[in-house]
Image 1 (spheres, rainbow, N blue to C red):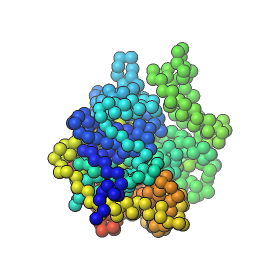
Image 2: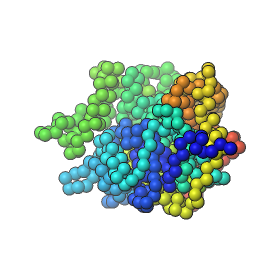
Image 3: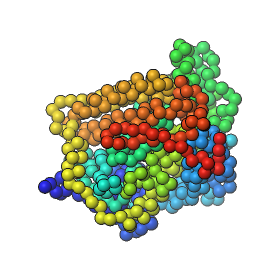
Image 4: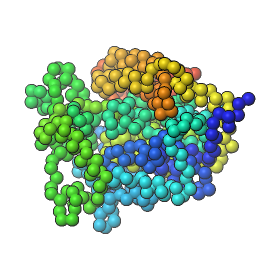
Length: 574
């Protein structure tokens, strides 16, 4: 009989955290702070402290200051963002805790922007919105990594986690491999936390680090998925540079010079809305393209005032916050945009798919439906029902993704420690590990086959068209799903040249699976609600569709069911 040691390197811990970004570090630190003697290990396929999305955006952190009204925020969110699909209790708890979450994060060394009086600097894209944002530079996580290391958290980089291990119905660890030398790693843990990000389908660069590995592993293990139909976030981007343009939707014009987005009511829009993308799609179908945005009508694209004495940029002057890494990134993107689009004040744009699929179902303590397994951040942002009928972070609230990952990580770390204290010694079956290892390494044994990029491009062709993924209909979604199934057949013949290529094969399989989740859940919801719009069911249907769509792996079949939202238990009702 084959032993675990003969299959690979066996690593044991109390808490296994998969993913070394902001959510994973938050979970690891919180676990150690709750129980200093706990053995916590973070496994990251890239580099802990620089992984994930925290260092790839604008450094926005959403929060609700103590003096801003929780009731006002909840009313706004439920009616204008989540369309009554939120877990309103969870949303209230998040909003109420957000300020203290950022204080705690800052105490770990994150260096959030503050005013002279010590309060958080507040940046508001639109003053009418009932919340605030603060800022940090893009190197916020290395100091947090040092904090975790000082607490005794262990780290293992360059290791891909492929599958979860189970003893009966309980998760007892995971299996993966090193991208450096291919060594198989078998992790035994009393509790496992997935913090590996969501699924972006690799269409827009800023989000492309999200490869869906954790989602796929959880689904294969039998964890339920919820609200996968909302995984189709878009951003308007410049055609040449693919650079997102914040506020572009406020000044869209067709080729005839006709404004295609309304002026009225936009001051209360928290961010890009789905109907802006639908407007672009309809104009293109009518032959009225290309669609352009006029920078001089976009408040977010106006030239800032000159910097005052002693400041390197106008933003530093306005915020009192030096952010050199963000400034360098912004300048690189601006140079790229100028090279692609020129110096004009008009740019051709299209809605680029950012996806943000994040469907792992969790409860209010971030526990999945599998005992021993927790999830945080963009693995479960939508699956938590935190934001209702919109895609994952920012969920139409800029900065809520980073703050949400912190908050979820803090909850999961504490809950995982409590679970681990009561859990039995994790049992790991060598036969199960052997079967999973053979499946994971199979592409290395093929002399010929399909390259991972071929599968990725096939899936992208099924999810990137707006008529497939944003403005949906039964016929178009069935066409898209057929393409996904063709990609799944291709994935059966994946071939890898080396261990990095083997990691790419795992990502390609994960992408196929996530696309299937998205379209099967989308076909089930027969209405339009929030970000979800169907041409063949254009109206919101509270009578029949105040429900969550749940997808689950049962005997290797993707089964879809619905579950009523317990609206009678929530304060806000339609």
